[in-house]
Length: 215
Image (tube, rainbow, N blue to C red):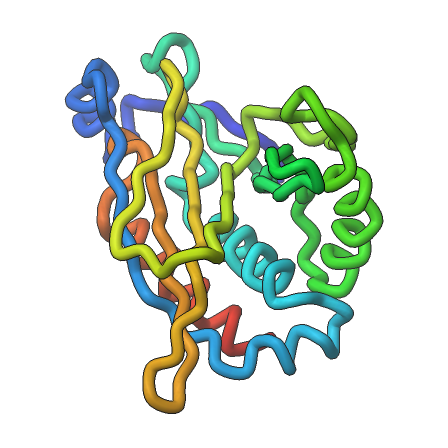
């Protein structure tokens, strides 16, 4: 497959695009608790930490939802659908600040984790510019899903910072919580309403949970 510009003449969401593209705040956010019971034990078999495992599952789930692979172009008058999207996530640095780490998509969790482990120490040790020591390779910024982790608290809602014309999907992961015999994690998904509705977010979470269970 290749990236494609969507023909709006036949696109079922053309009315949503016209309605939402001029709004000052056209995004919406949903927070859902996901079950991560046993994730640590399953992830280690792939050479991954839970952090890497849920990033990988979230990225794979996002790639399965057409609306999350789409982006507005031509000042919002057209839409492109990417063949593949990747992730950029926050990393806590040794000096207490944070930087960005690009996580290219790889269907294999083991390969995904191996690459991330190679670059994580360099990003953690970096200072200054938020992108210092990142190695995005040929990953285009327009194809990124923005991710972040807040392990200090289990939030029930989350709002992301968005710049002008920023339509990229954004995902936040919260603190693990023990509920009876289960382990859960809050996950917030923030999407542009011209591209995604609740049904798209629902499909994301359904696929995300299945992928977590299948690790």
